[in-house]
Image (cartoon, rainbow, N blue to C red):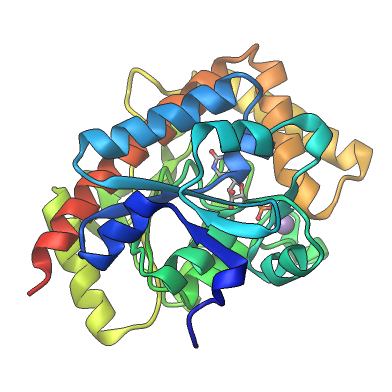
Length: 309
Ligand code: PSU
Ligand code: MN
């Protein structure tokens, strides 16, 4: 593919400079900010993620669509504009990017939308909270996140705390297997469960350091065109209580079933109900895990830059 036309993209100077000199960069998504977390925590989390990436020695590049362009390296003021409710920024997966650009719509990018942009401009590492996946009633609804298929054809390492526990975790792991995407535990041989450290599923592979993760991704890329999922469990002090988690999950699933929400609104509604039911405890957990993932992604990006000849 040819590089994106300049009229469609703006790359912040610091980010462009880092990419040009093969210095470490971590991209961050905007759907979690605009559609996944309540105001004002959303903007605080975004700022904390950027700070965590910087503290690790990498440059953060928050990606979204603003004023008719893809922006790689949104400033916090721009992010605030993107998240204004009256702007009604769309939720953009990889398939939506071209349409939103051509029609002049603002938008927040999902994991799929973010890595689609990142790989086109030479960014190799991303951090998020939880990857999208196969929904629990997918056998009937076919609801499977485009995050999976896009990750299967986009060579970016994504650090996430597994997939959201609202999903069918077993089916999601099977799909990642079919799609050829490695799933690697960071200091664990259990697949993380987003709000919980352990989803109940075992992993075949784990690494003990960011350096080992970077080496594995670099070697993987020599032989495969897919992305790579580095699964980082939420810390033990930050986990959502198990009983509270299960009760919130039941309430969230019941809400979606009774309201008939479908498509891209399902995940935001589920996360919103978790926050309401747990009186904000799920937001605190989500916040802790996404910032920790940004920090780890920064370390991996630094290690990856060092593997280059
Ligand atoms: N991680 C979070 N909160 C979120 C998301 C990830 O902690 O809101 C977002 C990501 O943008 C991910 C999206 O790509 O949820 C998945 O949406 P869907 O299930 O509609 O594909
Ligand atoms: Mn979906």
